[in-house]
Amino acid sequence: MRSGEVSREIDILIRLQEVDNRIRQLTKQIETANIRRENLEQEFEKQATEIRKIQQTHKQANAERLKLEAKMAEVQSHIKRAERNLRNSHNQKEYEAAVREMDSLRKQLSGIETEMLEKIEIIEETEKILKERAEEIEAFEGKKSAALEEFELQLEKDKNELEIKKREKEELISKLTRGTAEVYLRLVNRSKDGIAVAKVVGESCSACFMRVRPQMIVELKRAEKIITCESCTRILYIASVEITA
Image 1: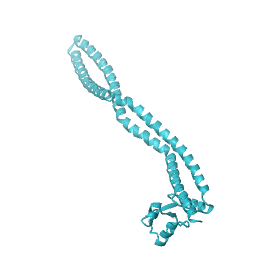
Image 2 (image 1 turned 90 degrees about the horizontal axis):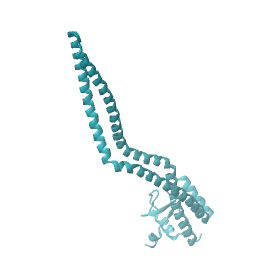
Image 3 (image 1 turned 135 degrees about the vertical axis):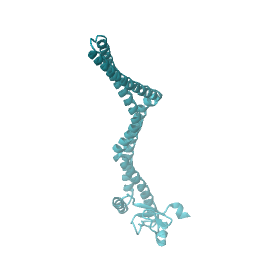
Protein backbone atom coordinates (compact mmCIF):
# COMPACT_ATOMS: atom_id res chain seq x y z
CA MET A 1 0.00 0.00 0.00
CA ARG A 2 1.03 3.58 -0.56
CA SER A 3 1.85 5.87 2.34
CA GLY A 4 -1.44 7.76 1.98
CA GLU A 5 -3.42 4.51 1.93
CA VAL A 6 -1.65 3.22 5.04
CA SER A 7 -2.32 6.50 6.86
CA ARG A 8 -5.98 6.24 5.89
CA GLU A 9 -6.14 2.64 7.16
CA ILE A 10 -4.48 3.65 10.43
CA ASP A 11 -7.02 6.47 10.89
CA ILE A 12 -9.84 3.99 10.32
CA LEU A 13 -8.26 1.49 12.71
CA ILE A 14 -7.91 4.11 15.44
CA ARG A 15 -11.56 5.09 15.06
CA LEU A 16 -12.55 1.42 14.88
CA GLN A 17 -10.76 0.75 18.15
CA GLU A 18 -12.56 3.68 19.78
CA VAL A 19 -15.90 2.33 18.57
CA ASP A 20 -15.06 -1.19 19.79
CA ASN A 21 -14.06 0.19 23.19
CA ARG A 22 -17.43 1.91 23.46
CA ILE A 23 -19.23 -1.23 22.32
CA ARG A 24 -17.56 -3.23 25.10
CA GLN A 25 -18.43 -0.53 27.65
CA LEU A 26 -22.07 -0.37 26.55
CA THR A 27 -22.37 -4.16 26.42
CA LYS A 28 -21.08 -4.44 29.97
CA GLN A 29 -23.48 -1.74 31.18
CA ILE A 30 -26.43 -3.53 29.56
CA GLU A 31 -25.39 -6.98 30.78
CA THR A 32 -25.00 -5.73 34.36
CA ALA A 33 -28.21 -3.66 34.28
CA ASN A 34 -30.16 -6.05 36.53
CA ILE A 35 -27.41 -6.07 39.16
CA ARG A 36 -27.00 -2.29 39.00
CA ARG A 37 -30.77 -1.78 39.26
CA GLU A 38 -30.89 -4.09 42.27
CA ASN A 39 -28.00 -2.19 43.89
CA LEU A 40 -29.83 1.10 43.31
CA GLU A 41 -32.99 -0.27 44.91
CA GLN A 42 -30.99 -1.64 47.84
CA GLU A 43 -29.39 1.76 48.36
CA PHE A 44 -32.83 3.33 48.66
CA GLU A 45 -33.92 0.45 50.88
CA LYS A 46 -31.04 1.23 53.25
CA GLN A 47 -32.18 4.84 53.42
CA ALA A 48 -35.74 3.70 54.10
CA THR A 49 -34.80 1.17 56.78
CA GLU A 50 -34.30 3.76 59.52
CA ILE A 51 -37.65 5.42 58.83
CA ARG A 52 -39.42 2.07 58.63
CA LYS A 53 -37.93 1.02 61.96
CA ILE A 54 -39.29 4.19 63.57
CA GLN A 55 -42.68 3.63 61.94
CA GLN A 56 -42.70 0.00 63.08
CA THR A 57 -41.70 1.00 66.63
CA HIS A 58 -44.55 3.54 66.69
CA LYS A 59 -47.05 1.01 65.37
CA GLN A 60 -45.94 -1.70 67.79
CA ALA A 61 -46.01 0.67 70.78
CA ASN A 62 -49.56 1.70 69.86
CA ALA A 63 -50.66 -1.93 69.58
CA GLU A 64 -49.10 -2.77 72.96
CA ARG A 65 -50.70 0.32 74.53
CA LEU A 66 -54.14 -0.90 73.41
CA LYS A 67 -53.47 -4.32 74.94
CA LEU A 68 -52.33 -2.70 78.18
CA GLU A 69 -55.49 -0.54 78.25
CA ALA A 70 -57.62 -3.67 77.92
CA LYS A 71 -55.60 -5.41 80.62
CA MET A 72 -55.83 -2.35 82.87
CA ALA A 73 -59.62 -2.25 82.49
CA GLU A 74 -59.79 -5.94 83.38
CA VAL A 75 -57.61 -5.50 86.50
CA GLN A 76 -59.61 -2.42 87.57
CA SER A 77 -62.77 -4.52 87.26
CA HIS A 78 -61.21 -7.19 89.48
CA ILE A 79 -60.18 -4.50 91.99
CA LYS A 80 -63.79 -3.27 92.22
CA ARG A 81 -64.93 -6.82 92.80
CA ALA A 82 -62.24 -7.31 95.48
CA GLU A 83 -63.36 -4.06 97.16
CA ARG A 84 -66.94 -5.38 97.30
CA ASN A 85 -65.69 -8.64 98.73
CA LEU A 86 -63.73 -6.69 101.34
CA ARG A 87 -66.79 -4.64 102.32
CA ASN A 88 -69.01 -7.69 102.42
CA SER A 89 -66.59 -10.00 104.23
CA HIS A 90 -68.27 -11.90 107.10
CA ASN A 91 -65.24 -13.18 108.94
CA GLN A 92 -61.51 -12.69 109.36
CA LYS A 93 -60.64 -15.29 106.75
CA GLU A 94 -62.75 -13.66 104.05
CA TYR A 95 -61.38 -10.25 105.01
CA GLU A 96 -57.73 -11.38 104.79
CA ALA A 97 -58.36 -13.09 101.42
CA ALA A 98 -59.92 -9.93 100.06
CA VAL A 99 -57.00 -7.83 101.32
CA ARG A 100 -54.44 -10.18 99.72
CA GLU A 101 -56.35 -10.07 96.42
CA MET A 102 -56.51 -6.27 96.59
CA ASP A 103 -52.74 -6.00 97.20
CA SER A 104 -51.99 -8.38 94.30
CA LEU A 105 -54.32 -6.57 91.92
CA ARG A 106 -52.94 -3.15 92.84
CA LYS A 107 -49.39 -4.38 92.20
CA GLN A 108 -50.54 -5.65 88.79
CA LEU A 109 -52.20 -2.32 88.09
CA SER A 110 -49.06 -0.41 89.11
CA GLY A 111 -46.94 -2.57 86.78
CA ILE A 112 -49.38 -2.02 83.92
CA GLU A 113 -49.41 1.73 84.52
CA THR A 114 -45.59 1.78 84.43
CA GLU A 115 -45.59 -0.15 81.14
CA MET A 116 -48.29 2.17 79.82
CA LEU A 117 -46.18 5.23 80.58
CA GLU A 118 -43.20 3.63 78.79
CA LYS A 119 -45.33 2.92 75.71
CA ILE A 120 -46.79 6.44 75.70
CA GLU A 121 -43.27 7.86 75.91
CA ILE A 122 -42.17 5.75 72.91
CA ILE A 123 -45.29 6.77 70.95
CA GLU A 124 -44.74 10.47 71.63
CA GLU A 125 -41.03 10.25 70.82
CA THR A 126 -41.56 8.38 67.51
CA GLU A 127 -44.44 10.69 66.55
CA LYS A 128 -42.15 13.67 67.07
CA ILE A 129 -39.42 12.15 64.87
CA LEU A 130 -41.89 11.16 62.15
CA LYS A 131 -43.39 14.65 62.19
CA GLU A 132 -39.95 16.26 61.90
CA ARG A 133 -39.06 13.97 58.97
CA ALA A 134 -42.48 14.09 57.30
CA GLU A 135 -41.16 15.93 54.22
CA GLU A 136 -38.28 13.48 53.88
CA ILE A 137 -40.66 10.51 54.10
CA GLU A 138 -43.05 12.06 51.58
CA ALA A 139 -40.22 12.84 49.15
CA PHE A 140 -38.53 9.46 49.49
CA GLU A 141 -40.76 7.45 47.17
CA GLY A 142 -40.64 10.27 44.62
CA LYS A 143 -36.83 10.26 44.67
CA LYS A 144 -36.76 6.49 44.33
CA SER A 145 -39.17 6.51 41.39
CA ALA A 146 -37.22 9.32 39.69
CA ALA A 147 -33.90 7.51 40.14
CA LEU A 148 -35.28 4.25 38.74
CA GLU A 149 -36.92 6.08 35.84
CA GLU A 150 -33.63 7.83 35.03
CA PHE A 151 -31.86 4.46 35.21
CA GLU A 152 -34.30 2.89 32.72
CA LEU A 153 -33.99 5.88 30.37
CA GLN A 154 -30.19 5.63 30.44
CA LEU A 155 -30.40 1.88 29.82
CA GLU A 156 -32.59 2.50 26.78
CA LYS A 157 -30.11 5.12 25.52
CA ASP A 158 -27.27 2.64 25.98
CA LYS A 159 -29.13 0.01 23.97
CA ASN A 160 -29.82 2.47 21.16
CA GLU A 161 -26.23 3.72 21.15
CA LEU A 162 -24.97 0.13 21.07
CA GLU A 163 -26.91 -0.57 17.89
CA ILE A 164 -25.53 2.63 16.33
CA LYS A 165 -21.96 1.71 17.30
CA LYS A 166 -22.35 -1.80 15.90
CA ARG A 167 -23.44 -0.36 12.57
CA GLU A 168 -20.57 2.11 12.64
CA LYS A 169 -18.15 -0.74 13.31
CA GLU A 170 -19.43 -2.67 10.31
CA GLU A 171 -19.10 0.43 8.14
CA LEU A 172 -15.52 1.08 9.28
CA ILE A 173 -14.49 -2.54 8.74
CA SER A 174 -15.90 -2.37 5.21
CA LYS A 175 -13.53 0.55 4.48
CA LEU A 176 -10.45 -1.48 5.41
CA THR A 177 -8.59 -3.80 3.07
CA ARG A 178 -9.51 -7.42 3.65
CA GLY A 179 -6.11 -8.29 5.10
CA THR A 180 -6.09 -5.39 7.57
CA ALA A 181 -9.67 -6.12 8.64
CA GLU A 182 -8.81 -9.78 9.29
CA VAL A 183 -5.75 -8.81 11.37
CA TYR A 184 -7.77 -6.34 13.41
CA LEU A 185 -10.64 -8.75 14.09
CA ARG A 186 -8.25 -11.55 15.01
CA LEU A 187 -6.43 -9.33 17.49
CA VAL A 188 -9.66 -7.99 19.01
CA ASN A 189 -11.08 -11.48 19.52
CA ARG A 190 -7.80 -12.80 20.91
CA SER A 191 -7.01 -10.09 23.47
CA LYS A 192 -8.78 -10.08 26.84
CA ASP A 193 -9.15 -6.31 26.84
CA GLY A 194 -10.28 -6.15 23.23
CA ILE A 195 -7.40 -3.86 22.28
CA ALA A 196 -6.05 -4.43 18.78
CA VAL A 197 -4.64 -0.95 18.04
CA ALA A 198 -2.14 0.61 20.42
CA LYS A 199 -0.53 4.02 20.44
CA VAL A 200 3.22 4.34 20.86
CA VAL A 201 3.83 6.51 23.91
CA GLY A 202 7.34 7.44 24.94
CA GLU A 203 8.75 4.91 22.44
CA SER A 204 6.80 2.10 24.14
CA CYS A 205 3.66 0.17 23.19
CA SER A 206 0.79 1.57 25.32
CA ALA A 207 -0.81 -1.89 25.47
CA CYS A 208 2.04 -4.07 26.71
CA PHE A 209 4.51 -1.27 27.69
CA MET A 210 7.39 -2.97 25.86
CA ARG A 211 9.90 -0.66 24.21
CA VAL A 212 9.60 -0.27 20.44
CA ARG A 213 12.88 -0.50 18.48
CA PRO A 214 14.12 2.80 17.00
CA GLN A 215 13.92 1.36 13.48
CA MET A 216 10.25 0.53 14.00
CA ILE A 217 9.62 4.09 15.20
CA VAL A 218 11.12 5.34 11.93
CA GLU A 219 8.91 2.96 9.93
CA LEU A 220 5.83 4.02 11.87
CA LYS A 221 6.54 7.66 11.03
CA ARG A 222 6.92 6.79 7.34
CA ALA A 223 3.51 5.05 7.41
CA GLU A 224 4.36 2.83 4.45
CA LYS A 225 2.93 -0.35 5.97
CA ILE A 226 0.94 -1.66 8.93
CA ILE A 227 3.33 -2.42 11.78
CA THR A 228 2.56 -4.61 14.79
CA CYS A 229 4.21 -4.74 18.21
CA GLU A 230 6.95 -7.38 18.43
CA SER A 231 5.80 -8.23 21.93
CA CYS A 232 1.97 -8.25 21.92
CA THR A 233 1.41 -8.15 18.11
CA ARG A 234 -1.07 -5.28 18.37
CA ILE A 235 -1.20 -2.78 15.51
CA LEU A 236 0.95 0.24 16.40
CA TYR A 237 0.56 3.89 15.49
CA ILE A 238 2.12 7.21 16.38
CA ALA A 239 -0.06 10.28 16.83
CA SER A 240 0.37 12.89 14.10
CA VAL A 241 1.47 15.48 16.70
CA GLU A 242 4.34 13.22 17.73
CA ILE A 243 5.32 12.59 14.11
CA THR A 244 5.74 16.32 13.42
CA ALA A 245 7.43 17.01 16.76
